[in-house]
Length: 378
Image 1 (tube, rainbow, N blue to C red):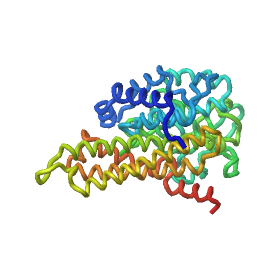
Image 2 (image 1 turned 45 degrees about the vertical axis):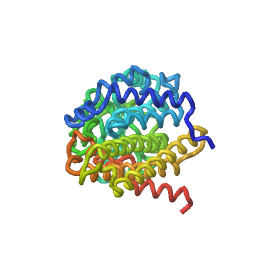
Image 3 (image 1 turned 60 degrees about the vertical axis):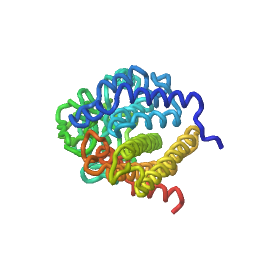
Image 4 (image 1 turned 135 degrees about the horizontal axis):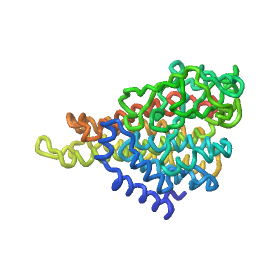
């Protein structure tokens, strides 16, 4: 079995990595993390390059990239920060809902400005009482003549506050647990919607929010797809989402390890480099083992998806193992850097913060293990 990238895949990897090093870099990443600013310059550049449309078909203006090419992209853009990657990936996932289920009018209105890097999307699923229980939605939409009236609340709705953002909101339109859910297209400036940005330790660049909907009125055609199909639509891109998360964890873990190696080679203690101490050598060797295993799990899942095969179990395995590997690499990096690891300019503390969030975000590790067990028939 040949595990090597093709020439096209290698060129794509080198192109995106070069972009991250030359157009983004560490200083830009630190600045936007510290100031809690969305990286608009990078988002727009990626739009101009056509990268935001990787998941969309050519007829929708996209590149129709296969899962392996998408994983390569996600690994590279998370080089310095999972949050930077999320700034791109959140809108990319949500755009697929418009492409697959939107009307011609909705596609025409929302996709072109997104592809140009001028518009962002947000997905509103989680509620205060339902985190991992994503189907336990209480926010309700009721049809009143030619308008939908929505009442309820959402939390951890990332990017909903950004200027001109459009929220794809999961709301209850019926009593059935799954078939009673629908998706709605909600402008973030609609009357009756209050958005409060949350002061979290991660998601500083993308930002995450609390939403309150008080008799929000939307036109009848604000529904995305068919009534009662919201849960199905959300589930359609979960393989791509979890694949992208796994790949991003691998990319960030590699940087965390590389930073640790560089620091221990130049830092001296007791008359020799830290890299000469066996305990640190072994930790870094273990991190290298874990990262390589996570990378192989991720690309094995991506290859399976590219072949058109179902990969629910594989992407969940990759996500869990990759984020655990990232957290261990960042934790060991913090130990190696000592007090300096706590400084933002060393980056390691950001890697660890964001890794901890990855154990919960995008489906908690415990939920992923339940999915894996179900796929195993237990």
